[in-house]
Image (cartoon, rainbow, N blue to C red; front, side):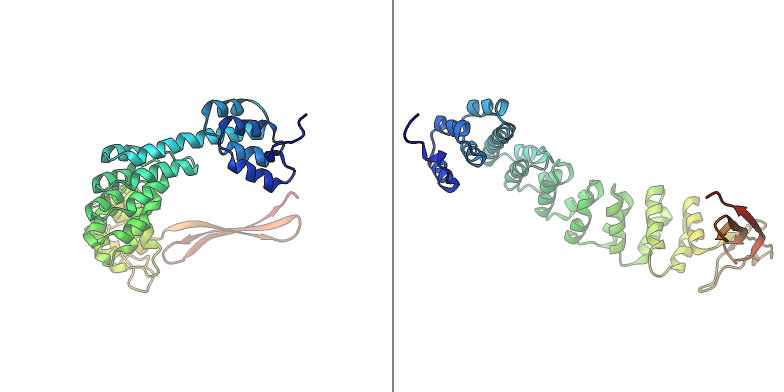
Length: 331
């Protein structure tokens, strides 16, 4: 054995790491990985290795920590090369291909490679393509941030499935009611559709969509939006019911109004503002109740319960067929 051991084998961790920091020779660094005896020192040496053949040997043999660290270092070197290559590219189409195909794997290197390419893209059409079709969410969002062309933003709003874009696109758009109508009627993302609905200033614009709507998904989303507003707009719903082309829209509007079509004379009965609809048809005076089943269970003691069932009209609240039954429970 030699009388002196290298500084990287020092029992003082700080001194050993300092010695590794000064090393550049690849064979000496490989020796540190093999013989240091301290995982912190060994990993520090691995972090300075650039010789792939040496790294590949460590990645396939030795302790698990060293194998994993060597594999990560190899992966890092590969992506470092790709990032450097991306930085040298000037062709906008090639840069777009790099940005779009940067995978969403969670590793920092993947994100940097796509972002490096994206920083050099200036063409608005290409940026829109990356925003719509990129694989990495961070790169897609960064591409959107660089877009100023309003037509391209509308196109992304309509054709992107990404929920992460909804609020960002709306904050960048100069959103007229006409543009909003175009997005609501044609966009693929429900989140985008609902957020755009909240941005519309004129309720009459929403009515115009429903009157001509044929896509049930769009229709359902708009009625969901209307049902969640603080104040129900009976005037809008009545207008939609009267003007809508599709029976599906008419039926939803009438249901939202709390009205019905008389089973006898087919007259439309709609409640007056602030009042429930009368179940007596305003034209022919026929009763038109809409009964649904109700049930209530009352526990009497540990072994018995009372079950009460009845039917109740959804419109006027009339109750009928009330029945009470005592049941024994199995505890």
